[in-house]
Image (cartoon, rainbow, N blue to C red; front, side):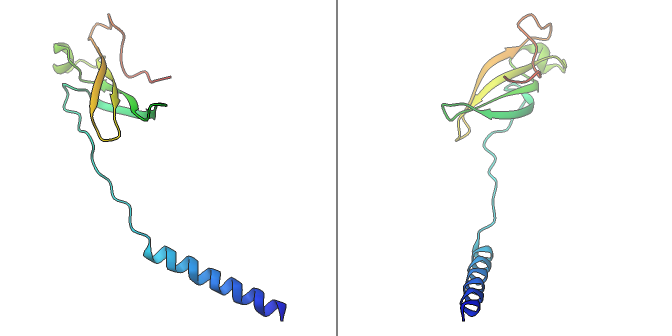
Length: 106
């Protein structure tokens, strides 16, 4: 009799799991921010800070004119809120006099 009870419990658990899998909604993605060159280009990975905001780098673009003309050593360090508000923390110049982008964050 104990085997029958265990089998019944296993069947109920299986049906419950199957029902959850069928009714789970699909994930959807929302674009929070698009980089247009003046605010950076070719973004790298994001890290989330203790304040809940995201921090990252771009390998190109930025506020300096040389970056906008296709220089490959430009870029930015940026902060983005979970809602997509961007703050550029650093725009690198093409001669690396104020640092060079696309290295990564620590």
